[in-house]
Length: 394
Ligand SMILES: C[C@H](O)[C@H](O)[C@@H](O)[C@@H](O)C(=O)O
Ligand SMILES: [Mg+2]
Image (cartoon, rainbow, N blue to C red; front, side, top):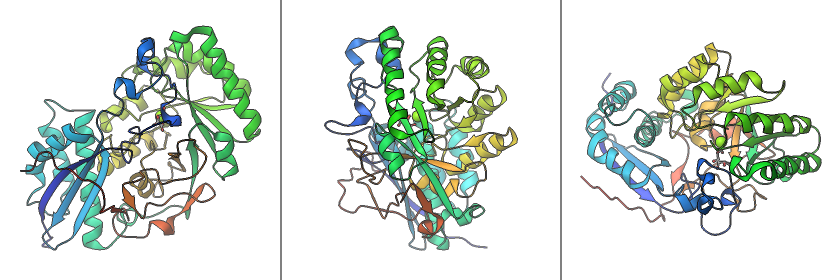
């Protein structure tokens, strides 16, 4: 059956929040002395922006079809990802049927293997893949979740990531995930402060709230184990991404040594089915957390989730707004989702990719009804007032 074809693909960049949600201005919980692999250098310990966590900015991919339909997606990537889209990936998209997502994905990945595989190239591939899913939804006038098998539940529950799990619980979230503030370089004093904060949050959030620590690749196995053992009395539900993503062996060892009841999670800086196969087969985690804008897009996330399911693992994508909501509601092994509290004090619910998307749904009382996703594609629009810049027009 003849399908519309892709007639144009354009890559733009944006600064100031949105998909590159670390790109914040002024005081914000997400850049408040948070432990990272750079924390061993005192000059880079206070702020993640100081070492460039917000250096990339947002990549916006726009695609158009011969029937006049358009699709778009936003992810982290900025100008270098825009170059990859315009100067390399565009050749596999232009002229292709809007249904050719598998062939386009395989060509984008295979053609960039000599310099890609993970990281920024997979962010760019993810952006194109998500834009193509949005375009297909526009052509078919179907929401993405209906095109990938349909919802398995009527609503999605959320936990909140931010500095105030105590407030999140009162807003109806399952609980909260705190950023870890101190790593090994800050010694026993830092560890004590990490545990004291968790104890305070447990007292404030109550005995039943989920509490987790996001360690953002900042620890070593020994510190992670000491943190988890000290946190067990406060009911730490999971310890997230304590080690650098390539230390599969450390994750494997740590998972075997954690206190009973403390889960190990990771994956937001992993990419492709092969990376997640490694995590699954080496027993690195209980919950896999791919970011759909970084792991290879929705097409690859579906493949990753099948691998996880076969290993009895949950897939709870890293905070990625509508791009993961449409996925999560269709998978039995994605029973809850992350919501990043992007208000500077983490004290109110604002759209995760603010200010870039119009009609971006947000949880109410910590949950989102599938019916709020019943619009074509991913169901959001790019704010037409944004200062879009196209750095590499063809
Ligand atoms: C809160 C963490 O430090 C990161 O900023 C966060 O983006 C990510 O790790 C997450 O899981 O949300
Ligand atoms: Mg994380």
